[in-house]
Amino acid sequence: MSEVKFSKEHEWIKLEGNIGTVGITQLATEMLGDIVFVELPDVGSSVEKDGNAGVVESTKAASDIYTPVSGEVIENNQSIVDDPSKVNSDPESAAWFFKLKIKDSSEMDSLMNREEYEKFSKESNS
Amino acid sequence: METKKTSLFNLHQKYGAKFVEFAGYQMPIQYKDGIIQEHKFTRSNSGIFDVSHMGQLFIFGDDNLTEDLENIFPIDLKKLNLNQSKYSFLMNKEGGIYDDLIITKIQKGYLIILNAACKNQDYKIIEEKLEKKYAMNLDESLSLIAIQGPDAKNVLEKIIPNSNKLRFMNGDKFYFKETEIYITRSGYTGEDGFEISIKNENVEKFVELLIENGSKLTGLGARDTLRLEAGLCLYGNDIDQKTSPIEANLKWAISKSRIEDNYPGSSIIKNQIEKGVKKLRVGIKPKTRVIARGDTKIFNGESKEIGKITSGTFGPSVDCSIAMGYVDNIYSSLNTKIFLEIRGKKIPANICNLPFYKKNYAKGGTNV
Image (tube, rainbow over all chains, first blue to last red):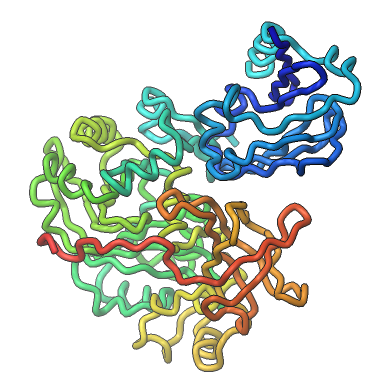
């Protein structure tokens, strides 16, 4: 089974070999509201852990997307650029944002598992 | 200062509202369905809006009051029939806008609907200009509800018989639970609709009945996307003390018969009408889906800054990014190509017609 981890910025990353797939969590979409615009990092670009890797805009506000780990972007999900509402309907699966070749897999260690993330979200929400 | 709640606060909670602070009030930004669904439901069926934070200012007096109010507002109040409403402005002496408002002639006086953030200051300005000669009441015992959309007339008719006979921008007294209510046919969404002024103690029951008859509560989020699609100004964003009605492309709201008269800012307004303005409010469509929010800088093809966005959002019914802003007048003509600076990139955009969304709605009491 592939490993899924979570960041404090409400991104998820699924690890398969040295390839990570990144998206935003269900909870993030609930906080953002209806998503109407997505901007993704270019294929071939390098992104740094916790650095800017795209933007989502809801009807209310623009929010930066951060990458949970460093790497090179090898694919981005054009389907959510064409139809941003997909991010609201299936954020943790079909509406992934980008895939990257991970530079340093030890960066995954600082991220939370689902249980830790749910606890973190509850605490930061209250 | 503690934030205020409207009389519908508990009902908003019951329907899953998310709240934001707006003009000192806790107001629902959206309910469970979210902004886009609420927006679309208003366009296809009807939406209910709690706008009780807005000011309901009653001023009572005789013909002298009409005379005195004409020295404040640039409209022909003498021609206003009983129960007829007009859109107008409270202006400063530079022709800037303190507030935009709806003034309605009622028995023995006028009812003026004011923006929530401006109402207390408006009261003081108007009171001073009228030299405290008339009875004035910014009535906090009343709530204000809007119901908007193609079904609004049918839903309201079931609760308030004969309300659908009202003509656009006209109002009248009706009764709910043996208590007087005042309804005008007006709104802020580009749809047919009504605004209902009703006692605080009766408003929850009234709104529950609207819901039972097929309407849905709609938050300030959808109110903003609806009004922006309809090309309507939001005070504080699109108009303020530094913009005149002429610059805001709202010349139509200044009565022609009043252009030569005296009211605050009248000489500047007359001059702007005759000689034109340097900047003008326009509609803007970005070429991509990116949202151009307030304060986004506008450039021409030679990277010269030519203006600023004042409101921008995604328009759910037009399915694209829409915005309004001010540009140097020479760039204000239709289809002029401009660029918007968003997160360091220059996004191409076009000047376009307002409103973005237009529907032919009932102007009269009969179904047109």
